[in-house]
Length: 517
Length: 70
Figure 1 (cartoon, each protein chain N blue to C red):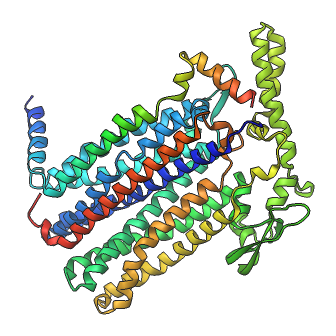
Figure 2: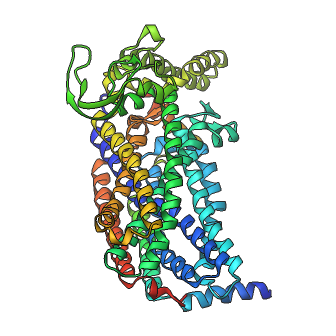
């Protein structure tokens, strides 16, 4: 353990985070806007009103720009798996392979085939075929997200697999339990609905800009109505999937939940922090302890959110770290000892096999299997259990920003829909400015959600089985720093290109799309 | 055969009639793919395990060695 290059681990994590977060700027807009387009085109086909065709074409151009700039940015994540996270890639190869192969063959193929019909097919294929193609692009892009999130769901809750000590790989024994893992399904639904909310806000924000400029008013109001209805339904569903996520985190990743809420001492009837500030409050037991100050809390709220019971016990960080015998919570040091047993058993199994001693190998294998669920903890043998706690302030604030903005978006959609239906939206400049300002907040909420999901499960790349320190490749941290800088340049250039092209299209407005392909 | 010809012509006409923004986006896509696959992948993102071991069993041995002698 003494030779861990923490600079390498941190830079590799930073690089992955940078790539994933930049990638996630483009993806949610693609996922959500594809459905908004499909809805708008459905209205056009149903009514035959050419204004809806122009409206669809304008948003299709915005979709196309975002799709083109964002496409393949996720491939870099796969490069990083092979170079920076080779132990991890080997360890999970089969699990990631199947969903990603299906994603590549089925979803991406469908998406990229029909996207050509969507852009080139106006006036060349029938209205209905074009509409079907638009819907298939939407479904295809969302299916891509499903397979990626299935793989991610397995990392949060490994299941349906068996570790093979001869190949050092987790092998899939039950595809359906990987696919229908409760975490994967809920994660997919929560993620895509959040993408729908983001896309709806982007449509409303750009439309509000036109209304502020007194340009393209009819187009803008039509767009706002579709986006506000779509956004409102999505945001209400987002709350239910968020509730589902909280219950799963409470069950499978209790440390993440405690960190999200800055809860150090668990209790029955644990409060839910609406707002608050984390301040240092070290104790003899936990020198890194913090306390939530200047807070507004809902009594029993966290217990209810976690277990559907206002009086349920929610463990805090200290309960999880140091154990709580009353509630049957094992201290981390016990888990670390069991994880060490598993790692030693794997080593001894290999040695016994090499020596041809099958009976001894069987004994070690039995120890490995009995303790395998603690395997990842073994890498912290001889170290402080504090290293198994994620960054509390980062996750705490990200969680509260995400929830706060998510709640605001519901009110925002209701307000926009109400004012548009009453035909008063164009007269209300403050609301229109608010709509434009809300646009970047949708991206902030997305990134905050990513931080909660991914930083909140640190140090695990695979929950309880593999921490980042064991997953990383032994390469030079300087190399990682160089590629980090390169990515920062490439992605920032792409983002600037996207913004410039989108702004130019917004300036041209929807009329530029009438009658053209 | 006729269907294949129609599909080919469909794409050909589509690309021939690309708007200014369409051409710009395709240029960005090609530059991006070039940077990713011809520069980043080749010079910066070689497969680490392949540089340490050749066969799947050798790779497995390498990973197990790293994990068990941590």
